[in-house]
Image (cartoon, rainbow, N blue to C red; front, side, top):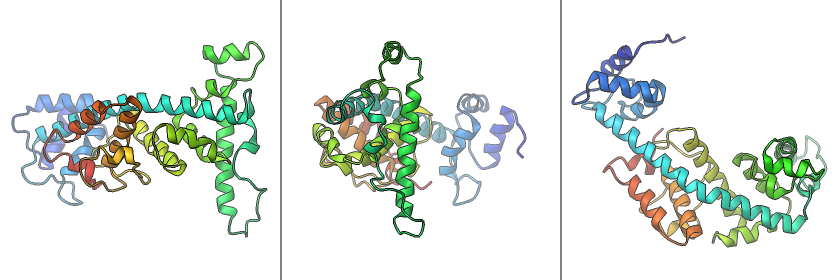
Length: 299
């Protein structure tokens, strides 16, 4: 168990590991740790360590650690700006086309709308694992949407107080983005989503589903002030043509840069411009050398 240590000791621990304070006073670095959290800063600091050791590489300065922390905070804030465009757009368009296809009321609560499409298969059947995964996904979607029927938001109570079921276009606004993503993957008839994909110039539904997962990952990291810099992405980022149009350099599929480029392309398409991609990707490239943490993460 690790014991609590005060700010002076936290600064000294970084110094003992080889960090050079340089032009940054011990007091300034202590306030940086006090405001940013020793643990959170350590995620960035570790990128400056020598191999797998707990020692900084030679000549690493406190200003470098603070600079990359500030850069990543700015990138996260820009990500949240982009998410504020993409997420409501996707929720709205999915609700529109899904309700058009299945009808109003609580039709979205019908288990028959979702995978798996067959009764439970025997555990010895090669398809049992997939069936079990699909059933778990469906059950999570139905659980979360059923919970909406008891929410106290005014636009939910508006329907409940009249004895009406909560329509999908209202319910979809209060479930998490994770539930929203699972909803799309759970649908049996994914052709319902083709108009949504076309509306944002994504080539097909599989790419749309992947994009939503990638956007959900970005959103959750940014919303919880997590580290994007030098962090490998969970899952695979598949770039539609709208993202390839704005990419700055080669993009490996499990990098923050790939996910950021995807977001940039989607926002540009929705807003019919290129100001967002220019701002976000200029920011990623704003400190020479540090962009490598987005394009070639090691942690």
